[in-house]
Image (cartoon, rainbow, N blue to C red):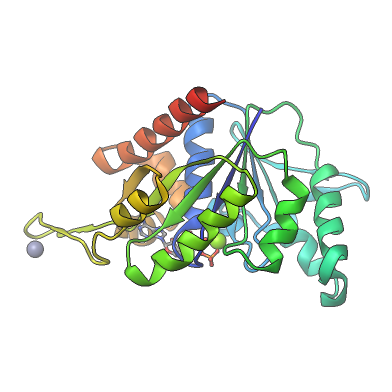
Length: 250
Ligand SMILES: Nc1ncnc2c1ncn2[C@@H]1O[C@H](COP(=O)(O)OP(=O)(O)OP(=O)(O)O)[C@@H](O)[C@H]1O
Ligand SMILES: [Mg+2]
Ligand SMILES: [Zn+2]
């Protein structure tokens, strides 16, 4: 099994959308995939997947992940609401997450995708400690504003120090294609290349802003499972690039 973490230096850039997309594409290709949301700041993968938290089953000892096709899903959102904020402080929090992950009945998996908390502060560090030595690769999600890139560089350096192999930069909301004239508008500039060069990483995806995710489909998961075409193909290409890189480097 390959364990892939999805993170960013910044919140709101599309980490969860990317984690769900990656897991969904892999599972649509026939792989057995686990998706785990441990973004303790705002776990919302279940919303993107259209799953009610109350659907998560436990027998008091084990958690049964929710199955969506070949995809098995579990979220820390479930544990967070059940506990008082006090329990979630410091090392105890890390221990609880550790327990939560271990007690989930994943079964046999080809890939485990983990939606990590953003940044390089105490919280991601604690969560990272749980997974150290278990992560095969990291995907860094970014948008291309100058203001995002400084934070993203920090997490890249942090992961390099932790000796976690980084597959590359996943640029989200790269551009918007005008439905009237067909022109591409680079709303946030084109600054990711600069960061790629500086950190010696490849840009493995340039996913445009896709208004249909919200307007027509309501979620990235429904968009991916129900649409075809050039934009959808960008997700497939990105996943193929990731798989190629995993084969190359491990
Ligand atoms: N390529 C895209 N096109 C259109 N909408 C998008 C795209 N990527 C993300 N979004 C939307 O932007 C919002 C934020 O995305 P998402 O929740 O994935 O970000 P995040 O980095 O996980 O945020 P957080 O830091 O809060 O966890 C969501 O409403 C999502 O549907
Ligand atoms: Mg998120
Ligand atoms: Zn136009």
